Image (cartoon, rainbow, N blue to C red; front, side, top):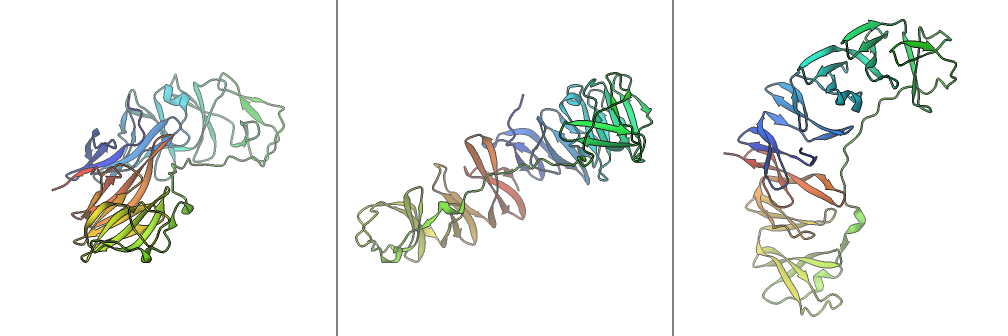
Length: 349
């Protein structure tokens, strides 16, 4: 089973699929486009397109063959164990898709979906007319109930139902999928609130960068002239110029600004310009109107300036200790991706 959520969209001559951080194809490129995976409960899903239609792709399963739908946040583990998936159309109306039998067993007419904590074979459905129906998963049968109003008690994590919004009698479901009166008391202000789980990514803090002082006072041999400097993780890096070109060195004589004894060339003076990205601890390289990146916080090779545009796109969380930086680049008129390791996630003409 594929467990990695850090899959990267891969462009193979216009067809999109997914690869890992090393560029190894994991999901064969066959889509017109594809997005990044997001977590929904215990599952990882993404959006893919064939032609003008969008589909929802579930990691380790494939895509649900219902165009212009997505997995709903009403989906839960109990349904997944039965291989049933709650989908949602562009109008936010939900339906239930049976993956095993490849059929839509409840059409997209559901406004809200409520599990039965006493018996997972029954679901309670609020339709577009706001009435509550009971769905029997075993019999695949929908029964209309007398309920037309509901509340969710957040404090006790419990659903309550009533026949109208003026009715004083409240009902709860039993293990037979029926509604029975309850004497429970609760605060009606606890209304159901939709919430979406954002897939966030790590950003470096602004305080990580310290401009190197007095860089203009440094004297170098071989025609090397200091241009700008930065201190990263206790090490000092200086962008220098030599014979009209730019390079990068690590300065190793910290504390003595008038006499340079030790330095190491990180990048030779081959570039038209090198800009320090103070926020991201990196160096933007320019050569022949193409852009690249040099990271000094990793052992990865230089991302040479081969791209019309290069910009940080997002961090992918590979594990608890490692966030993998992904760049979006413009190459031959196409927006594609390159990893911080220099691997290109595309093959273009």
